[in-house]
Length: 91
Image (cartoon, rainbow, N blue to C red; front, side):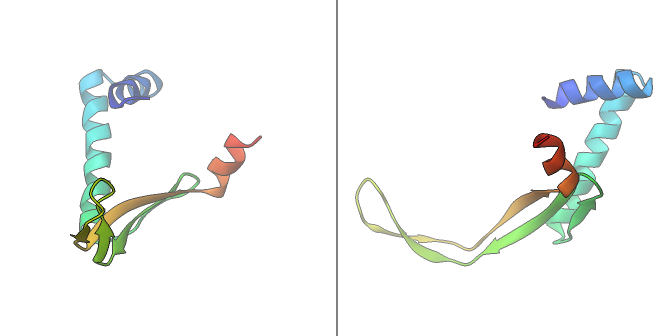
């Protein structure tokens, strides 16, 4: 499902026009992104958790040349689905 399909589904289910549904979807995504940017965890009951994983710097290898490459520290978003989602997928 793409973002536009999500907007259309919300529009149909909630009886909103597409502009209002787009505002809702964009606001939710922006709120999640802002919380993650601040280092907060976002928990949506019966759906899952969004959080930030931090990785230390390390020395990697370029697979083409075999030379060492320094990889800087980074923060990556992570999602863990709830038990309800796992059960829905594995009925």
